[in-house]
Structure formats: structure tokens, C-alpha cells
Image (cartoon, rainbow, N blue to C red; front, side):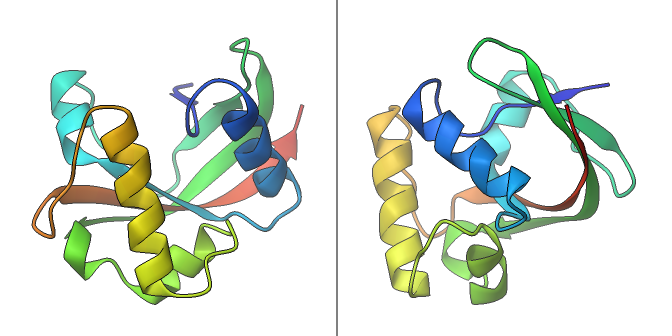
Length: 125
């Protein structure tokens, strides 16, 4: 079973995992370039992933319910809202994600390719 690591290690990962466990976070977004860099294939509908915590521990199992590729500037509000992180608008979602990716050294533009995943919680560990 492949692993899904949300955000960066520390408080961010703990917060995002808690949102998944509470059923509020049912989507996430990643950079297509990271898949290429890690030579990893995209997730597929029906695939189950181990959601991992800060120490690599298995905190839950999720099942992928949707996979789409979209440029950063074309991510929908439906997807952004499903991330469950409290953004009140698509502009707020975009600003937060720009800050995150710039903070880890990968600035994004409107045409930067993304992978938008939808999922459901199957079990918590």
C-alpha cells in the first residue's frame, strides 16, 4: 500500500490528518512535477493509501474516489472547498497554496500542472 503524506512534517501534518479523521478533508492537491521527480505514477480511483503521521506511522486508510489534472489557475472551488482547510473563497485557497509551495521552494503560476485527488476515509488506525 502506498503512503499519503499531507503537508509538511510537524503541526501542519497533524492538523491536516485531524481534518481527514474528522471527515472534513476529502481532497488534496499536489504538484505534477513531484510525481515526475519521484518517478511515481498517479493514484487511481479505488486505490487505497496509508495516511501517515509525522513519524511515518499509519494513522488511517483512505480510498481514492477521483483523480484530475488541472493547471493551478483552473482548480475549481468545489475541489478547493473539499480540502476542508477553512478557505472562504477560491482566491484565499490560491493564496494559501501559493505561499505553501513558495515556502518549500516551488513557486507556482496559473499554468503550473497539479494533481487533484478526492478520497474517502476507510478506517482510522
